[in-house]
Length: 454
Picture 1 (cartoon, rainbow, N blue to C red):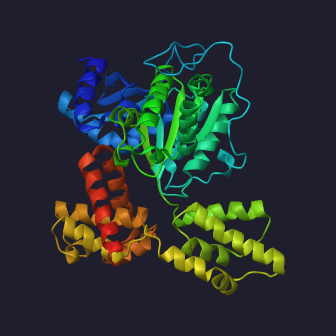
Picture 2: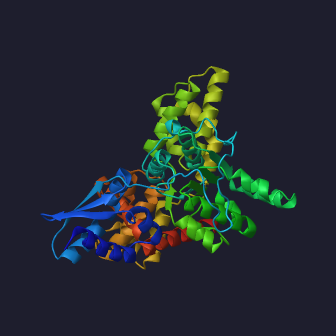
Picture 3: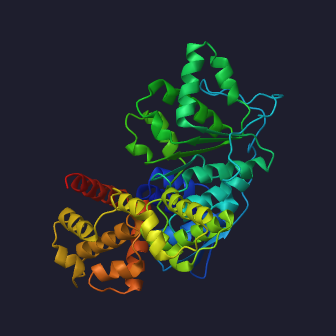
């Protein structure tokens, strides 16, 4: 059987096991090109996709290919250039009442981009690896992959920074870029209707190559504005023009979101971004101290990274207070002074609803799976208990930013390699297992509800 036919059969099976958005993002443009000596080679359009498939879907792909061929198969992903005949066209036709680019229109004078938010000032880590890498990928080839790119996460985790960074990188390619918040989009849309300037509003988007929309959750329950954005998005995607959108939640959790718009948003890459881990927080602090031109002892930086872990914004605010105090008073700061200066901010940080007590996480997961908390921290290794234990590891790592030794300690003194395996297992499976994703969101909801009652 030819490699291409085998791969087509495999893709048919993968469509049943992987949700539509992930299939379109990672698998749709792949092709089976060789099968010999037990090695099956799949052509993919980029290095990023090759690495992602290898790290996240390898076991599923290998299992399906083994089933089809009746033999053990080693899978290799090989990057091959993909031609795009319509990429980034400069003249388009109207689609479904949408807004289109017209030849001969002048370039935008303003893109609303902030000069301080670039890729060079963004610190990448495990907490933001997927959205950061995707952002870098589309910045080199806007409109070719991950379109739309939808980034969601808590306030202050770097979503807006990535939007502006994409904008700057795209402008360096002489592309027309616009950054706009969903609130600003709504206000301008309403004013255009009120002042009978609908055409003027549409023209603002008609000569763009890259559209960046921030905080789309603001459009919740705004029916007309959602309809307008849907048509704009439709037109951009049809013309291979890049759209990047951010939110504090995934599309399915935005209340009263137009189903057609939701479908468009979920049709590209949906990538979540978490609060920075300790290592990333230290790297952020080191960069910011250079920008502020101050020297702080590593003990002080560690103190900040330990106590301010919910968001980059919170971390930077604490550092700025210390830097301002040091400049005004000429003091050399140590940990004791930092404790005094930041005491009120630390208390507020501890009350942040994003943090859950480890015991609360264990109890919530145990209740969800109808097992004992002692089973999770003990030695039982049946499938249900292991899954519950891995979810606890994942939540403590992603939600609380606990380090590996802390997680291992609360789970019966397990070593760091066991914790890493558990976290990575859930991180990989959550992408292709919609039921697992729902279970984790349900557990988070239980934790939030429990927190509000105390």
